[in-house]
Length: 105
Image (tube, rainbow, N blue to C red; front, side):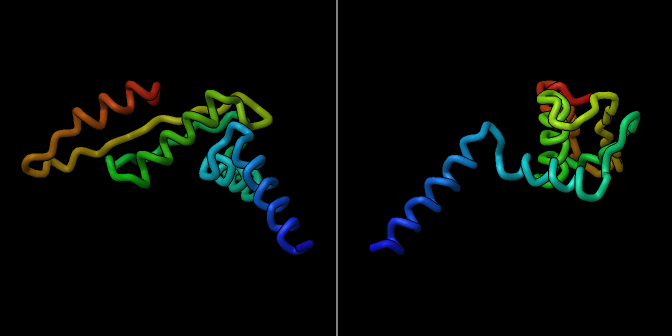
């Protein structure tokens, strides 16, 4: 029985962590920025956004970190860049509209 109670406490602790107002990916990105020194005061960052899940998520999470002031300094910025390779049928306007709606420039 003691073991079961320990599991409940562990689940409860994990649940409380998840309720701290941050998503796991957001928390992990902030940790990586800190651990590896990825963003420093005064940095201007260019994020290549293809419109796929990975790059769009990165742009969104960086915007959340900026808006929530999750770094110990606030004088950094980033810009999203999409390279139009002039592929037939490619329409970047939905991506541009989505980025603008998120407040990403």
